Image (cartoon, rainbow, N blue to C red; front, side, top):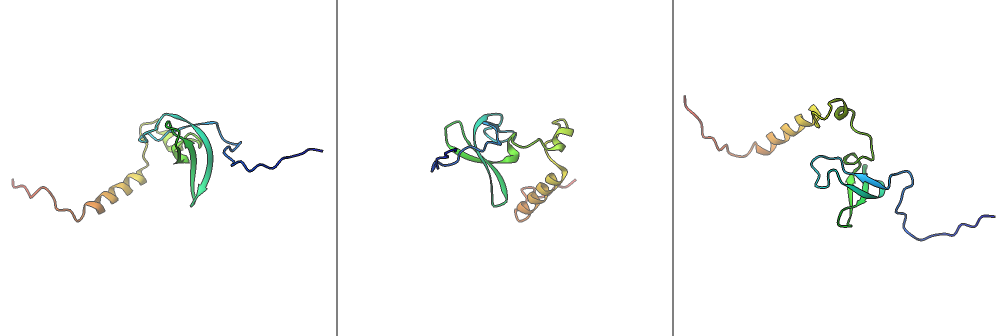
Length: 112
């Protein structure tokens, strides 16, 4: 008969995940660094990876900003030439227009 002792230790490892996680988001301050994996968890419909940063602090990152998930097919096909989808760029342009719509223009006008 096998005896299994109960444990009250917090679960810090998920056996289906790597021991180290590389931050792949090009603009994140930890980009390119491998960090110690703690766990992967969905929180408010967001898939997050929890890791210890270089200072030993527990931080969470969107799973898509790491090598835990496969690369975006768009990025792979573009060969690294473009990290942005046209839809995302159009959204960004709309946001810039909305944020700057009420601001007075610094250019008063030009005459030929």
